[in-house]
Amino acid sequence: MSSSGFWDERYGGDEYFYGTDPNQFLASRSGDFLPGGRLLCLGEGEGRNSVFLAGLGFAVTAVDACATGLEKARKLAALRGVTIETQVADLNDFDLGQQAWDGIVSIWCHLPSALRRKVHLGCQHALKTGGLFLLEAYRPAQIDRGTGGPKDVDMLPTLELLDQELSSLQPLLAQEIEREVVEGPGHSGLSAVVQWVGRKLR
Image (cartoon, rainbow, N blue to C red):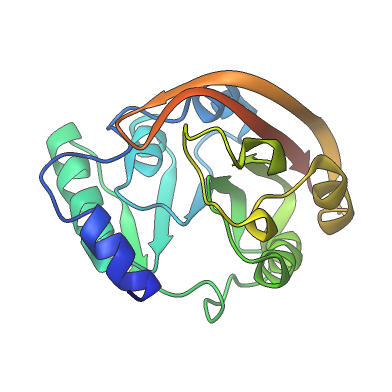
């Protein structure tokens, strides 16, 4: 099955596979974004995080390779009475822009390491001065837990790798922790995660 076919199948039902509430880490740090800013959510799937941010008054664009997921994102936005922009795109080809975003959000956006490095480099150029990059991902210690995340260790970043890949940003928070993740049937249980927040100073 192709990657797009995998996600079409995962998002094809009426249920939201990762729930409709925002990621807890994102929700706890949402006040770090510049008020009213223009935000980009990477690998946004069914839209729970972008809809949450739009509800706080941000102008949000959700990008994902799966049209099925983004269709559900638009439905969720309409249900919550907010508006989001959606773009169906492969991140390998997506133009992040230059000085385009006040914030970029990467929640469980697990990519092959070579593509992840490319995307993270692009994110640093795409942020406006003062803009914020926020990420939560599973790390290699998660691989055999069965509580969520890909089974390919190449797609699971460490804190050390993220520090290298996002080196032009000023870290505000950078840590590897274990926490309970409860996000629909897709993510459920004690998980090994890495969290990284940084700001572009110039």
